[in-house]
Amino acid sequence: MRSVSYVASNDITLLETGQQLFPAMLAAIDAARHDILFETYIFAEDEVARGIEAALIRAAGRGVKVRVLVDWFGTGHRACCRRAEAFAKAGVHYRVFNPWFKRGIARTHRKITVVDGDIAFVGGININDDMLCDYEPHRPLPAPRWDFAVQVRGPLVAQIHFEAQAQWMRAGRLDLFSRIGLFRETRRTPPTEGARPMRAAFVVRDNLRNRRTIQRAYLQAIGQAKKSVLLANPYFAPGRKFREALARAARRGVKVTLLIGVGEFKMQDAVARSFYPKLLAHGIHVVEYRKTQLHAKIAVVDDDWSTVGSSNCDGLSLFVNQEANIVVKNAAFARAVRAHIERGIADGETVRMEDFEGIGWVRRVRYEMAYLLYKLTMRIFAIGYA
Image (cartoon, rainbow, N blue to C red):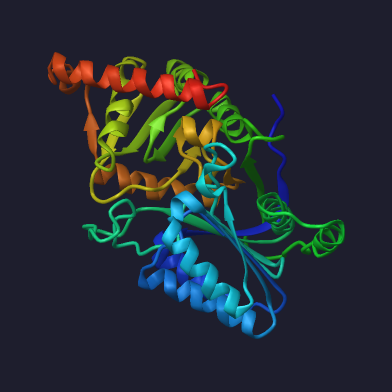
């Protein structure tokens, strides 16, 4: 199993919800001088998204080369069309990933912004209002959608920049001269000498050379865990290898805790709950988060390994969609991620075996049927899911 390749001397800041991400992102866009690469799954039509859109248009207006890539399914056809017209008038280069499912079902679920090759933002936060439900855009949430991103400075930005440019190329057709120019634009960011130099890796999943890279990063960290594994995710339906890695860790005395979002999709809740009896039987702690919509894809293992990104722990993210995570080897950063997950656990409801056993056979059968349907679907669309 190939190990994750870390880059030293980075300064990485954890950002909680759009309330921290969007001001930092807007400041970077407004300060851009040369180049902006912007990629997202959902680019909504709310006030927050219009503010980001206006900043990108302002940047293009002062001569910055702005390239925007959105996912057709996540953003929606109508929004894609309106924004195409607005961006064309403003001189913003704009592409839509896999419209009408012309290239199969894969989506670009990544959330990446790179400004001037100097600063990058990576995470799970879409471009939409934290206080509005993203699957029912007009329904208010009881609290800001719980999600995370990171701001990256340092040599790792060059890798993120390169991958964002490659994705831009994959989404469209460029002639030979454009391709040459594209790669000439990639610059190497000098190491930062900040107060928090960190080792970190940029890990992507695609359907070419990186089919299992994100899952592999998780499996390596869980397999080496000595004390604890804390994982927060909205959609928990990983394959057999992932589930077995968690069970093995729990059997060797590692405290494994899963914080799982519920209440968004009934089918997804049923699939996740179909795993509960075996997870609990292995000594894995399961907590359901109900305070608001949980959209975070974060984890921390022991004292110095953590990850923040776009990849859910389900078949679509691990075997179908295009995803991007940052993995950080740093004790201070891991403590910050741990503190957030522990706060989420405190806000959640612990699942106990006796509670699950008392749900009745009808609901239990419904959970099993949901899992079988999900497994069949993933077997059709996702090579490697079991």
